[in-house]
Amino acid sequence: MKIEFDSPDDQDDDCHINPYSMIICRRNHLGTAVYAIRLIDEGEIIGLIDGDVIDDPNYSSEYCIDLENGKSLEPAAPFCFVNHSCEPNAELLSWEDDDGATGEEVWLVAVEPIPAGTEVTIDYGWPAESAIRCGCGAADCRGWVVASEEVANVKIPAEEDDE
Ligand SMILES: [Zn+2]
Image (cartoon, rainbow, N blue to C red):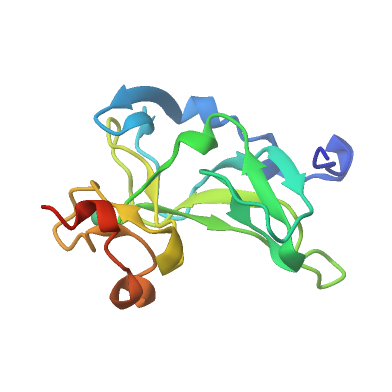
């Protein structure tokens, strides 16, 4: 199912943000990543995350974002390429609509100034059972792509027992 948005006439100016005026995708040691091409101010909206909403509580994928009501958002480019960091400089936000319901629109917002040339990252906040090794390079990297409150619950995979 494709997310359907209000008609452009009903949207405020934020909906017309062109993320490609702020970011580009290029490859780094982790694969494809998203980089700022100009200074992005703290609190600045980088873009609306476009994608498919999957209405299946058991749905899981590499990039999907959990929404309310057991739904998932499978983001399209460029935002599917935003990597995890344990010290992220951006986060995902969604707003309640006029009826008080959390909408299916998810926005990427800078949580600190992001200089040009800096990778844009978010904290994936995954549960322990989904954790994979983290290569974010942050000074206080958790070592795993996992929510901070879940680090203690991470079980080291059996294939790493030989190390
Ligand atoms: Zn990390």
